[in-house]
Image (cartoon, rainbow, N blue to C red; front, top):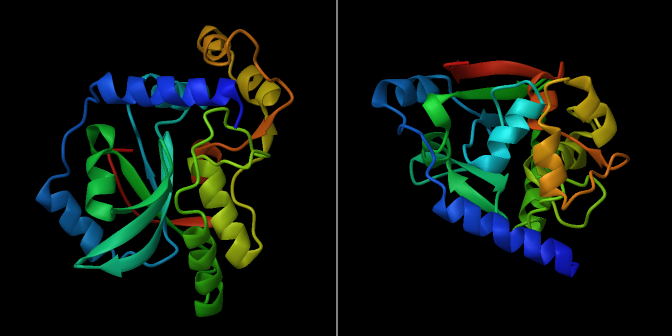
Length: 219
């Protein structure tokens, strides 16, 4: 990792640590609906994370969602979500994963057709191989590090050979939305937006025709 990436990562961790996130813990009735929907291993979970960077991700992509993870296990009475988060890939209980979402917004979606057991084993094996991998704050699809939507895309691809979401350049992404906060991205990238860099967003995965809704709230 370059000095520039180290510096950006350090600043992002600091910002995440000192910035309050306006959110409310998931109420029992809403989580009861999640349980009743019977989530499966391989289901994809979309949420809305606050803070300066992830709020801009949602704003730029004209979507409510700014974060995504994938269910990889059921343990101690709750499902387990694998996610690429600052500063590295980790596993989080589904209840806690949903608790972090602003305004209790979330959507759980299922691949169609649902992956068979062999495909799920491939997905879980790949997810486990990524644990501890650093977060890419440059949102670079070609980077050795990863970020939430790249991580989920790669997990699904490893098991099903299907590509969810849209691969696009920053130029396409930012110019597609006339209201995109270019000033923020110029600042984020230290004055130079990498226009030709390819990326993938939670919003494009949310709208993928390869996914069917399981349960959602406030979206």
